[in-house]
Length: 240
Image (cartoon, rainbow, N blue to C red; front, side):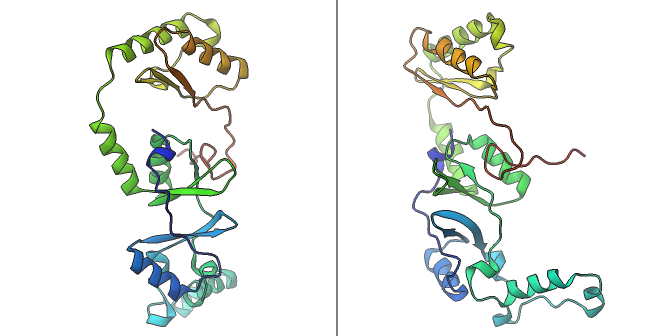
């Protein structure tokens, strides 16, 4: 399953200029705990309940002791003041936003959310615009629906075994990871990292040649840059 299969598509959003009181009323009225801040169709931040807890209006803003201010930069103190006194979404939102593409596998999304300690992640379409959002609840719904689906059929197992055997017999394929070949109702899903275009195409051709295959879904990924926040290129944690 991928992001597009479980994401919430009808997403409530605000703009960077939306007033903070309006955001609070919107979240209460819609019974949501966070709202993406979108500009030109692109998510630029997220305002959550946590971002609105410490506010000057309610007298809950944090008060930094004078002695501690000596160890903090003027810039960080000013940024905190903006977050607690700012009047618009751009002042209180958490940014930058961690996002995923709609083709991202849900296993990768769960790993990302756990590592980044986030509760939700916007989903981007091919044009870079937001097409949905995934929360922890969406992941649980995906798990529940997956558990309710029938087990892999004998035909699916036969197709998978035949494809793995074919790939193992070809020198160009290396040693395929069994977990990267999934067959569901005659449809072959290929996952994993394949940097050579010809190898990628050959794997698809091999799958198409197996009797009983209805279609082949190519999820093979050739990108592995670590300088973006969008799956599959999010930064990797530093080694311990």
